[in-house]
Length: 323
Length: 297
Image 1 (cartoon, each protein chain N blue to C red):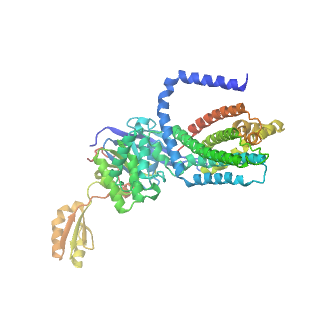
Image 2: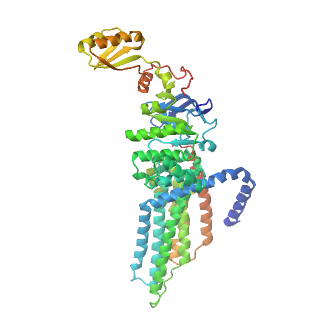
Image 3: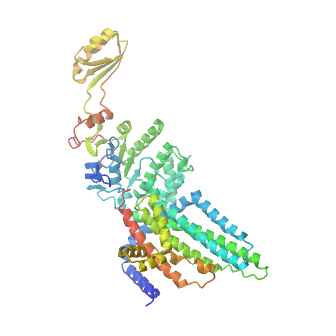
């Protein structure tokens, strides 16, 4: 359940990378404001180089901001008690190659100071959760990409974290692996974890997230629930079979119809009152109606519109959270 | 006042200060020590699985055993040659291993990004650096101990083989060999700390190159001291003095000559070198921890 309790707060975060060759610097994150509520699954999406991973690394204290602040559970990440309550899945599963799943999980659990028996129970529980019991003795370097990613998720869960930070959890996985990982994330969400997720796979984000922040060139250019970002449907789509070409041409000439293509008739949403007359025209033209839908724009559509500046900027959205 | 007395007074002051301020540092140390130990254990476990380390140990053992084949030498010359060659093999391979183990400790974690999953957990950066260092020390201690045991075994075996010969004056000098190996280990510990420091600010390649330069210069410190004293150009004099002061005096840990030639060994000199080495290691690791704490990973 999502509450108003803010788990992660980022204010005015800016990160400029400077080097000998770029003394002016490259701005990776630009004045970013973002907050994640308890129990919420928040996803940061954006093209490569938009500053997503940099933001995650700053949250985790792996790199340091040029300006701005980040607090987790109201405290700095340098506070060890904060790190006891978070779990991190890095992109591309970087774990020690020479150890097997059982040894890796035992080691990461030991970093929290858990006694041996508790570690043993935890390892069993986590291997079961991520479906790795049968492959527990396989060295990490011999694991498939999917197995590596699942083990990496398991290491992020050794402390039963309240906040889970996932960087590209399905990166490099095949469709079956992506499906499996998405199921796992949904299970963690069901268990009440607060999740901050960075992903390129917009379909997966749509499936699991309550709110989405779109980052572009280091800035948060849009933020809100998918419903808020997508807005109302803009089209009515009628799928038909057997529609005669002459009838299709007549339909396409109507004001209400945006286009007819391969038996699919697209109407403007604002012409909803004309739906019956269009359906009658299809019937007269020898067509049979298979389906009438009012599709909402996908996250992919919203993403493209946001980059073009056609979606209201972050902060202009309402603060309602889809539950 | 002798340097030994000064060292004792210094040690006493440190103990008193630490005791009086224990309430301030005890909780932090209470968390740090187990954390350092966990990182050290995984470092040792990882090294154990790497075949390169085992291959080097086998190579050194073969070299030590093959030195027994020089049976045409007189027993005295044989023992001299075995001790000198054996200790040199231990020192050289110990330092080579130290360079390659230590140079990869931190940079490899950064390059393979395994550090992400560790530093996002309740582990402070200095705990990570110290854990890596302690892990490397354990690995190197085991390797040097194995090589020393093999050398002693070879010396004892050879001693038994030549006892029946007339004019047998073979002297395995076991206590001297153990002392010289221990001092080699101390040199390795000092060098490892410096390599860890360099590795917190540079890449693996740069660290390896720097380590070889430090090893060479550190072994030539008496010569550098003489060059500094005799230099006529002020800038050269200053540079040589800085090098002499900053880099570890690895030659102070080298007792191969005394032990293999049955010369009197200055154990006090050895203790002095260990005391200075400990301070050097402590200072180096503090700086390494500060550098790593500021590093963007």
